[in-house]
Length: 281
Ligand SMILES: N[C@@H](CCC[C@H](N)C(=O)O)C(=O)O
Image 1 (cartoon, protein in one colour):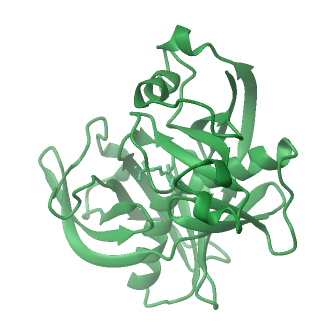
Image 2 (cartoon, protein in one colour; image 1 turned 180 degrees about the horizontal axis):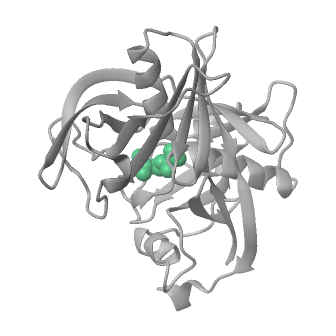
Image 3 (tube, protein in one colour; image 1 turned 120 degrees about the vertical axis):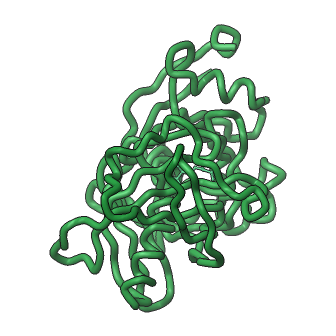
């Protein structure tokens, strides 16, 4: 089985080309490929499949040739992956499977069709409009933090830190406890602290994330989107740009004057290879 390894700000993926949707991708195989000792290692698997060849994306085939079939490292399926989307686009471009037109490159996801624009080293992609809809809490050991529930196509809970609690001191080895009624399908939890003002950005924050289905990761694109949306709302802004520093680098979230939300950041392919599924299972 051919694979490519890539990452966006350290959020890393095993990319599997499967243009005609012929691969049997079980949760067990996904988890085995993502195993960092016995497999290739990754926060998730991205299958590259033609929209027309995947039952969940066939309706998008007229708009977007390719479907990003995203799976978390525990084998569960997620609706969207912001870093994965940029890496997916990089893969399509490098392998000559698509070219970006004047209005960008459309990609089908479980959260709908999104459009990527290719920059100088970075890629920026339109994102599902984040919807801030409720308050909730996350508990880490003895620390309970209040947060804002944000729907970015997938579920997020954005928690600001109390005075005296440092982002770097949080232990995210275990999943934060959350309200299972508020988040029946689980939740990605972001922890945020303010950072120093940055020229050209309306807000600058630092975040760490515990991802549903993957644990703590170096970065989460939809998590950054959720954090950016809360930061702009708290600053009383409806448009603007937010620099979100993650363990693996920097992402920029922008809400433009047309009401479109964008996520910009690097997308890097680091290796190609061949893996024997029998050997990793
Ligand atoms: N890392 C991703 C999000 C991946 C999916 C998430 N773990 C979920 O289950 O919703 C990103 O960059 O957005």
